[in-house]
Image (cartoon, rainbow, N blue to C red):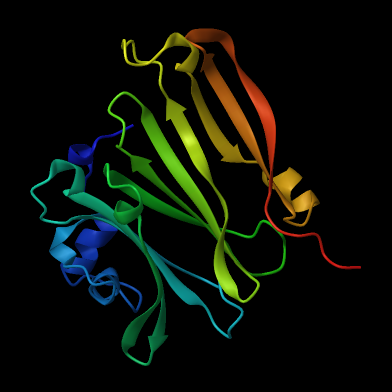
Length: 227
């Protein structure tokens, strides 16, 4: 898991800042609308997708940026936003600052648009590194979806975890390592009522497994449809 200093500027961002060809709105415009100075952005992703039940697609973006704070834990942050286009203007509809939620430091924000229930609206998987514990490499995830007239976090948890570092502060029984990926087939089978993950376990209680073990994990995502 990369530390903040290992972050690099993505090629698409460079093209946008240099005035290269880009779909409207380009990343420069989006980051400005998000309240960021584009030159402070380390990595960023801007995609389009139908995430709200309004006509047309929304703009979904995430940026990992340098805050300018002297505190090392606050020097890099992750901001997520959903935006809309009003003519030539880009406007924020929803914003989350993950650095505020995890003051120990976050970085390497990424997004993925999914449709886990087949209703035509895209769910948003936001992932980012959490640097709050120097002894644990942890990547968090949040699945956002439109339900009950609002954007809601249907699931929050770890998509990657590694506490196998040999350290006196970490007891052996806590030294685990695993990676979670969404099992789309099982999730779609329930029409998104249950979110399934394939949890690939590499080490348990300090013992590295001879072969990684995959466990199917269910998490409730939304209420079953009324019949």
